[in-house]
Length: 548
Image (tube, rainbow, N blue to C red; front, side, top):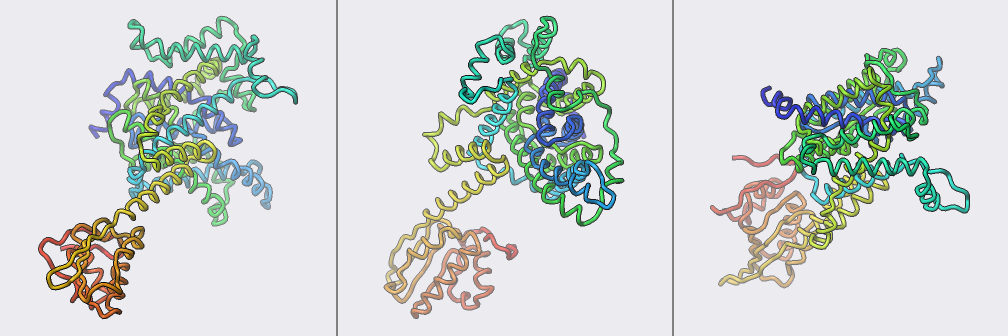
């Protein structure tokens, strides 16, 4: 409990200001994702508030910012559309039924995430290789950059005009594009230069830049896109909302049966998986930047409870958001208070200060996001590309590209699979056999390297069964039988020698290997030689490990 409260008292000033900055940058991002999922922006903002607050309080990574993320939002698009159609097909038709399916799906998503934390699946994020982490960061930075470019107003061109010609013709005229581009540039300049000027070095640069640009636009009367105009142009009614309350309509309209469960479960499982992957990857990134360590299992539970409550209160699902988290970390937000402040400030904007927040220019927020993209992208990856193994370089590039063109979860899974295959291949070719003869004519094979499913073929090629003498000894002092496939390969090899009426002796096997070999092959008792310096390790198999 003492450690929990330390997360609120370590540096409250920085956390409060960082949280306020993030809340401003959160609004257009969440609203954009709401438009993608075709839901009311206030539903997404409510979800961002609830998930952000609960994960900040109970998650496993202080400083990590959660909200209604696009990686999760896109999963619900088809489900909502199909849900509307299902509702109209009921005996008593229900309009907008897809939204009720959405809230139920978010609740189930949260339950799956809590279960993942309970069964300690969060630890597996530690198995993600560093090249996958770099690819994830670079790919997501590019995705966020492209999303910000879509905020720029560009007039439609004619059939003979290319997109570039339209862009540059707009840029070099006093158009909305020119105004926004200049404001974005000024915002970025303020963020970079403000900390270098000693009298203002302690001011939160991003928040100060947003305030300066907002005041300039208001007093100059410049006609540029604002948060309010962006929401209305997208089909929303504005930012003004109310305090989230339990969604009783969910239980009145949603049929609680196996058919509903079968419909929402695939979406809930995919959303839970994507949400946890993005959250845990972001947690890993914050761990590296702050040189501290978060709790992956606790983060799974925190994300899960946040989504359960969000669904119950009529909010959409969410997860850790790398962009907002990087803004928070760069603004020196390190504790739980920064996430709590983000959520409370966001709620205050919606309930009490909507008309003022709607005046904030989109350009100021895009400028903040551009700075975040520059700071997040792992520029060192260009420098190290020629210094790291080609397989690692391939994984880095592959994960980056897949993240951009497909999906974050697919990219991470692909990166881990490629890395695992490369690891298996490299270890498969490392197995060696040194051959020598004893004075009595016994041929000794001294094995070096791991014997597992990937190295079986190379292992078998080391032996010349037909030409070997009558007595064979296979020494595993410098080798390790890693899995059940290795055990089976050893059994098959011995059987082949015995079929040629030759005697085999196995030396320096671990107690676990001996037990597994003898269990289904009684004759192995006579060919396994006991030794006081046998190695001690366990074989990866379904059979329980031997303990003494």
